[in-house]
Length: 341
Image (cartoon, rainbow, N blue to C red; front, side, top):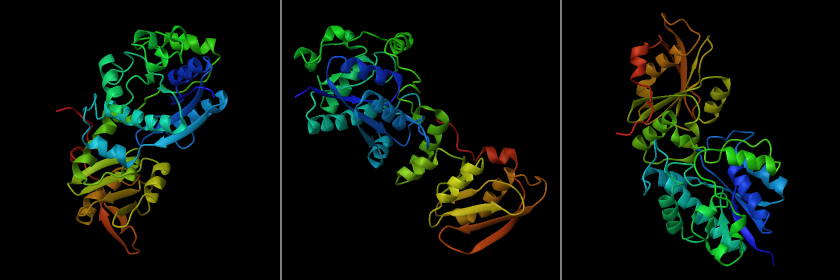
């Protein structure tokens, strides 16, 4: 029976190289891909998952894709190890990944887990001290191998047991990608996408919207997280949030996201955004929301125009006349970028 290993595969260059290094030692690799609502390179037709599947097909790997959903969002509220430069819970995120990887390792009878991590490449989760914390708290101490920097780290159990030849592992460190790019040429790996680990929670503009939702919502759902990716976001009260589409694609996405109780806004006779208002007191804010909708439309800004609105799940439609809100008034309603206090 061949030795098996679980490889955390994002589809980025580092994890792809790690797979190649382990495969060259005659070890069967089973790929494991993780996704969350905050993967920065996720889109409808491309992204980390599709790239991971592409790599697994090219290398002849079995692959399992796991999605971090509600469990991840609950952790995000209060990560044990805190946040990074924005709202990114990198250490807790890695612990969650490795716990799942450990479960899968035992399920399929693999000998160890490996990743494309490099010491010093990322400031929070790829330091020696945090790597040790992650291993210990995930229950995989000694069983996580990092082929690209393994010779700069203590021997792992698979190395000590002779399953992996340490001399054939690498000693890359730091943020430079020169060695990885050189190896990609040596292994004939082309067309590699974004670096692994791209996360919207590191972007302060996006993190501000997440923080706003965490502060004003008792329940943070996956569908709420997905909505944060699109549109212009405004906070009118503790119980009312407004999202406006920026183009036709976003307008369509918002319209499909309307839930019973939401208010939806459209302009009559002019091109403009689709507006979605969510919250228990959104109806009382209809005049102000209408003014915001007019501000981002093709309608004249110095005269009142008709705005139609209705409640999701109900057929009745109302309308009112509204003039565009001023920029100074609007600025106080925008959800701001996240800043550490």
